[in-house]
Each structure stands twice: as structure tokens, then as C-alpha cells.
Length: 533
Image (cartoon, rainbow, N blue to C red; front, side, top):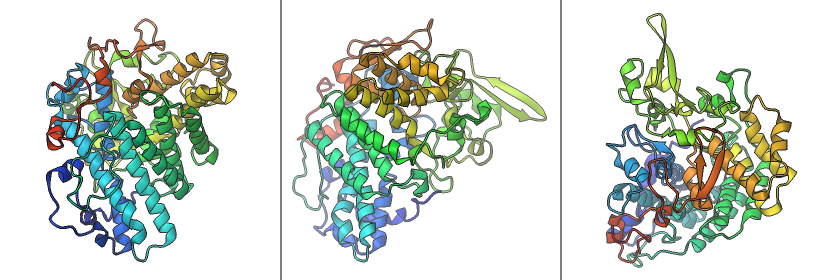
């Protein structure tokens, strides 16, 4: 159900600037109000439709075969993911080696900064002028404003996790005043994020995402709000918003609009393979849409190792295992119990196909990491060379894990918290009874139970790219064992050594603001540790 793409060609008329850096460089040619562009309902819809494709949402679908989408950057920085082409795509290499600077990854950091502030600029304009648009019904105004506020919050959430304190801009840029904006304390940025999301929750329809034409819903906004509260409760704010996170997650659960996909009778019909093949499933709370005829993504190409392009069966001339988990990450799984680590569930190490009447099985090169099977798409790889599969941003499984952690932190290890963690784990532990899983969790200390949630997040969300965000907010780094797969301990991230032999410093918990942006805006102050790059 691809409903959002049409109309985007007109949206360029609705923006004075496309990024923070643009308006720091150029003075406007006129003082004409952008509100003059909101003269018909279609203008308001186009303005909001564009937000689905800009900034933080786009970071799930941008990138290519050599360097995947922006959201993978944290996986490289954690040290737990690798890129076959990192000799060419040096951002991955610099991240693993913890040698990032404001100069050597300036282009990538510009992309994050400009992308988010470009989207925020669009959202600010929409928020100011939607209710002034002629011929819009009040119900339309309410919904469109809710969507615009959701995306403004989503982009600020991305920025504040990436850079910490960032400029807080809430009005359209319509004059040459206040061009050089200073950084705002993270707590104040989070306050706006929470306010915007509460407004969105109150304004958006109470529907499942896939039943709402893939537009943002009350439950999408509530899920993001729960995630925001969870992050606020951790470092650096430590504002103890766990109870609020639990409430927001419970609201999604109690809505009854989403549920976990159930496993079928065979590995090929597991819940994870249903996620891989079906865009319209009830577990998706929010996805980034692709359409093979309009806007494709490169995820299928990075579901295979580089050598696969030589097999002569795919429509793509280049493949690249650009987001491959290293063994230290794979050791988070219990290989005897966990379906997710089995072949062709989340990952794969072999590929079988028919050619010239023969069945051929290719085994990935020796010592090669598994590739993301969850991103493999038969149609694009074998027939069209264009991928229109949607990409998960939030799934209901994550809502359950947020609820389990937040309830344990705010109320203790209750039966409800145990249930939500068990729901996710039991789907993967197909040979272990639910009662046995519950028994193993019941009676744990709060600290031990919360760490079990962190472990389950690693197992369940590797391809939602949550690992670095979790390390940032907990300040804890997971350690696994070759001799005891499934066993995970946690150490302080500062001073921890990553799989590439590099030691984390405090500065690595934030990314550097690009040297380009620092030169454009003299009011900015660089993140600590990157000042003398």
C-alpha cells in the first residue's frame, strides 16, 4: 500500500531552506512569507507528505551497496558490525577504529545535520501554516499537524542522540535575523520532543499503521514517545522517566492494534520470514516505505556477500555484505535454542538456487560473516533489480521490550514485565516451553532482569540498528563468549575494548559536529574531545 509518494514533486515550493547549513550560508532573496504557499489543501498535504521521506526517516532507506543507510553508523561505531567494502567506505573503518574526527567523516556528519534540520525546517513551516490553509477541514488540520509534530520530534530525537546539545529551532526561517544559532541543552530539546509527541498522540488516528495507509498513527507516536522516555531515563539526562515510558508502551499494547506475528509450521514460514516478505503485517508499528517504481532501496544488494555477484543469477552487478555482524555479536544468541540465529532467519551463510536443471548451494567464503537474510528480496534480486520492500523502524516486539524494561525499572520485576519479555523470547525459543522461560526470569533482581531485556534487544533488534543507542543510554558495553554462546555480561563502555582492539573514550559517546558546519556557524561549540581534530 504505497500511499504517500504522490504529490511530493510539488513540495519544493513549500520551503525557504532545506537545511540548517543552507540558511546559515545564504540570505533569503525576499522576505515573502512561506505561508503564501499554503493556499490550497494540496499544499498542506504535500508539505506533510515530504516529511515521510526527509531527514531521520530517510536515514533508514538512503545509502547504497557500498555504504548502507545512515542508521547503520552506530553499528559500526559499536564495533559489532563490519562492511566488506570498508577499505573504500572509510566511515565504517574509522568508526570501528574509533578514529573518527570532525574532518575525516565531515561529509557523513553534514548529511545527518543537514538532513535533520532540513526536515525540521519543513515541519516548522507546516506547523505554522497548516491551520491557515483555506478549505481544509478541522479533522484534516488536526491530523496533519499531528504528523508534522511527530516528524519534528523524530528528527530532533535523532539529532540529540547523535550530537547531544543541538540548536533548537521551532519557527520557519523567514528573515535574515538570528542566522547563527547556538546549541540548546539536551533537556530543553527533549522537552520539545515530548510536547510534540504528546500533541501527536492526541491528534492521530487510533489504527494499526498498516491499516492507516502506512501513515503515522497514535500508536506510532506513542511508541516513539516510549522510546524517548526510555532514553531520557538513561544517560546523559538520567531523568527517571521509566514510569512514563511504561505508560506509553502500555497504551500501545492495550490498544490491541498490533501484535507479534506467529511462527508458521516450517522455518520458511517463521515469523521472521513473514516480516521479510510481507510489508502489510500487524507487527509493524512504523516502516519506511519504498516503491520499486519510484523510490527503491539497496537492502537486497547488501543481503549477499561480494562474491555473490559472480554467481551469474542476480539482477545486480554488485553485492556487498555491508552490515555483517561479527562473531562477538553473534555470540549473543544461544545457538541450540534460538530460532533467530538459525540459517535464513535473521542471517544466512549459504544460498541455494536452481540453474540449468541443477540445484546449487553456495557457501559463503571461509570466515565470512553471515549476511542479513531479513533484507533479502527474491523479486528484486532475481527478476526486477529494483526493491520496493518497506524497512522496519519500529516493531511491536520492541514495544514489548520497552515495556518490560520500563516496568522493571519503575515497579520492579512484576509478572507483567516478565510476560512481555517472555512474549518476545518465547517466539524465538521454539523448543523451550513458555513456562520454563517465565521461571528463568521470575525472581531475578531488577538489575539482572533489566540486563536480560538488554540482551533480548540485541537478539531481536540487530537489523533495526539499536545497539549503539542502547550503549549510549546505558553506558554499558556487552561482552560475549566463544565458549558460552548466549551468555552476555556488561562492562562500563568507557574503557571497554571493542572487537577491533580499540578502547572507548567518553568522547565516542557522541559524534563530532562536522568541521564544515563549525566553520559555517561560529556560534557552535564542538563536542568535547573533538576540538583539536
